[in-house]
Image 1 (tube, rainbow, N blue to C red):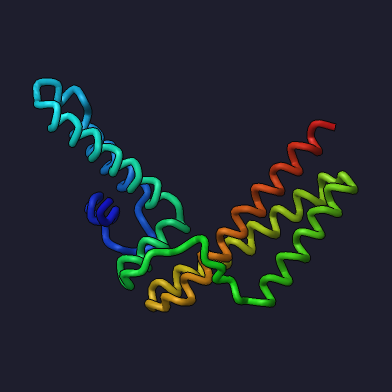
Image 2: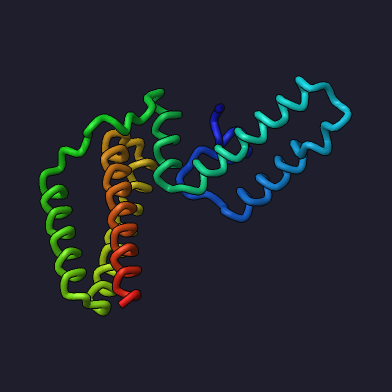
Length: 173
């Protein structure tokens, strides 16, 4: 797939106009709709389907702040993120992760819905802070810092998912 920003005719920047993104998505999908290619050759129909898949993939990248940031880094550095590579070297953040996991386990063990809600709000606030740092790093072309921050955001995404799983368990009781 090519540059998703280019595909949607958008500037390569972290902050995007979501309404404009949706509008351009719908226009691209209308252009590529199979009905428009019913009287075309099989090769042209297949190409339209492939382009439609590219548009869907580009939309997913642009809607997700982590994927969008990684795409911006890739566009500017030419380096694609290798998720298999363990790049988290921030020992303080690793220790913080352990503390948060222990806290979540304690909340789950105590079956304390109020503490869980409070913890979720705290984690979401921390996540927003990291998102702001990421935006600043991207604006300043601090690619290594931006990469580190996307790793942190992946952790927050997983932690919020785990919190939601605990919430489901607590609500079943």
